[in-house]
Picture 1 (cartoon, rainbow, N blue to C red):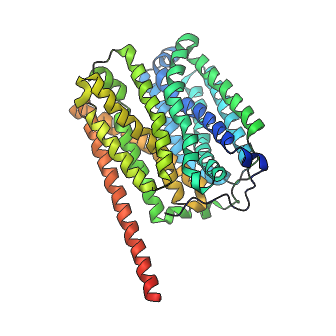
Picture 2: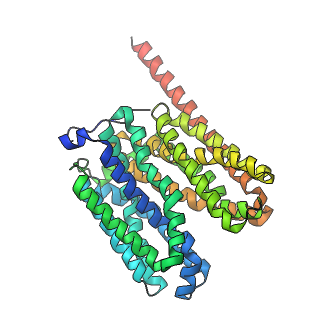
Picture 3: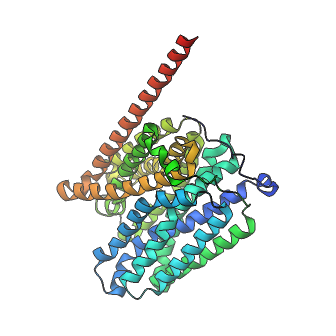
Length: 412
């Protein structure tokens, strides 16, 4: 695989950026924390939100579907169209969009206004992920690109560990509208931090959309995106129903489930670092290793549920692999298209959202047919398919390499 390129000649890294590359990545990680919390907080707010708006919970649940499908459908085009915009201005604009949309959500009188408040940030989310990953990698340089991207993805782990649980708890004190007001305030704070501390960093050279989308004609790149869909499908086939599994299968009291989920997220902080550390060495190899561990953890969750100590060990393996695969998949797809990394990063986010939706559907269908106790095995089966796809890609890459070597030998 071609290495991540350093910042091209048209990108200017000011002295302030060169002196403190870590600070922009930290700010981007904090912004990621707010963005991911905005995306997933509504999961914990559905019951109270539905009661307040006078709608069924399944109808409120469609707000999640709306967000995911908006990311999947509009993300690539918007990222390609905005990839040339100066990064600092772009990030500030995105956080202001999140501030306004969260404020609109807090003021929503009905489901339709709330749907609009969810639709708008879903347009901006993939643009952030594509450009933030690319920007962080450029600032860090090729040797530390994976670790820099994993720093940004640290915001995902932090949101799952603190943002979503604490936001749900806060909604019990200040109401679901108050939770959205809090996110609006945090979004404004992120915009301010970016304005003060982010270096001015030019966007990519303006390239026509048709030229950028040529990466979709590259079989190797498309295969990497498909692998991300497979990996995230496996991940969310089981993770979507983890809370239900802990309560109904492991017999953990409902008030304690949140603490178990928080522990799962805490372990993920290490997994995030681990993924960023190993992906620079071999993106495809790190994907295979992480997916194998993921499958083992998901398959072992039900057999281990009879012992809470053993279950904690299984969840440790599962949590590390689960969170490691976020930066691993992002870097792997970006490296497959060094000429259009922002678009590639966004396409990976779209692939992740497709996997989230497919995983939830497959897990739900499996539970309906065979029961909750089988969802871990179904997810492990999906992980095995992802591993087979990754191994096939590695085999094809090796065959291609040998073919090039033979052609060079013949020419000599």
